[in-house]
Image 1 (cartoon, rainbow, N blue to C red):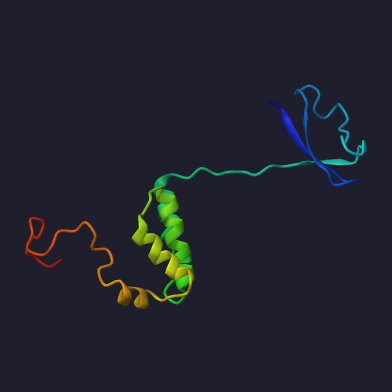
Image 2 (image 1 turned 60 degrees about the vertical axis):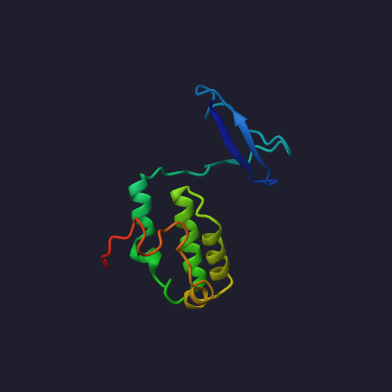
Length: 135
C-alpha cells in the first residue's frame, strides 16, 4: 500500500498519509494536527539482509575484535552479539560468565571462580569419548 511518512515543519507532528501512485506529488499534503502544508517526507528505516556467513564474518572482523583483550565489558558485548546472531540460547553458564564480564570482572577472575567452566556434558577422561591423544 502506498502510505507515506511525513513531518510537519510547523508543529513537528509526525504522520502517515495514504496516496495512490497517481495522487502522490499532485495532491497537497496537509498536517492533520495544525493543518499547515509545510511538511516534508520522512524516509523510514532501511534494513539490509546479510547471509549467515557474512554475519559471522563481520563478527570476527579485526574491527569487531579490537580491544576485547583489555576490556571485559567489550568482550561481553561481543559475546552477546554472537549469541544473538547465532539465534541460540547458550545456557545459564554462558549468561553467568557474560553477566560477570559486564560487571567488569576479568576472564582470569571468572576462570578462577569457575574451574569447571565449559565442562558440562563432556565425557570424563578415560571414558568412551576419550581418544587418548592430546590435540
